[in-house]
Amino acid sequence: RADREYANVLVSRPTPGVALITLNRPKALNALNAAHFQDISDAMKEADGDASVGAMILTGSERAFAAGADIKEMKDKSFAEAYTTDFLANWEVIAKLRKPVIAAVSGYALGGGLELALQADILLAAPSAQLGQPEINLGTIPGGGGTQRLARLIGKSHTMELVLTGRMIGADEAERWGIVRVVREGSVVDEAVKVASEIANKGHIAVNAGKEAVNAAFEMSLAEGLRFERRLFHGLFATKDQKEGMAAFAEKRRAEWTHS
Ligand code: CAA
Image (tube, rainbow, N blue to C red; front, side, top):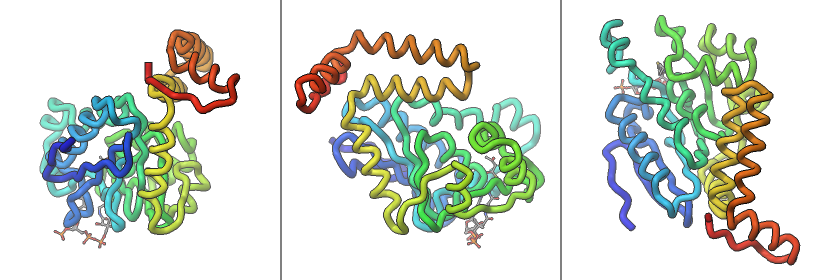
């Protein structure tokens, strides 16, 4: 099948079941202007709605995953314009995708670039990755979820350091803080394809439910989250994949998922 073509992103299928979306605005280090973001959003929604896709990967170039929202495009925005159009509210589209998203980060992931990666479900990084929220140096703060997602992920002190100093951290520090898993230089996309393919080869309903349950941990109290998890778990007893998975275990054979 032919994937739709986009001006600012490349879409490919490196292996069955996996959609690879590559940010492709190299001259601006993948800075995210409105057209670029629209392409990312459309390409990812298209993959999310495609039954042959089990997992997605979002990546950039070796030099930059993405250097942030496009400063030149937004520098003259007025408060009225930003507020009335709810500027950046559409960024939440990635977090709302049903299928798992793996961010494969090389080079700069700054500002909105890091915020985009933080919306992914699994983050892999090359040793060359440089992460940061430099908005403070522009007289502003992160607006694409950085303060909220980082605070939940790495706690108050590390988040404050990133947001208030604008300092970039390397891949090792990002791994120590629990933001990413670092892989060998030059292998981040290959690693992401491996992980995505492994996920794509599971039963898609259980994968969906697993993602939904983990994400609930960021939005609900523990009591609500535990109840939500258990209800999803109960619901999976109604699927053929659960019957097949458990029968295959008992019969010492490989499960054949039908995603039903
Ligand atoms: N917006 C617009 N253009 C950008 C950009 C951005 N965020 N980041 C890089 N570019 C452009 C540069 O202007 C330059 O274009 P020209 O060749 O036309 O001058 C090109 O990309 C290459 O960049 P540099 O020459 O600056 O490359 P470098 O290797 O010297 O530096 C860098 C790399 C450290 C990443 C530097 O480009 C930089 O600091 N970029 C800005 C990072 C930033 O502040 N990001 C946060 C943006 S605000 C935000 O994201 C808000 C939010 O929460 C959503």
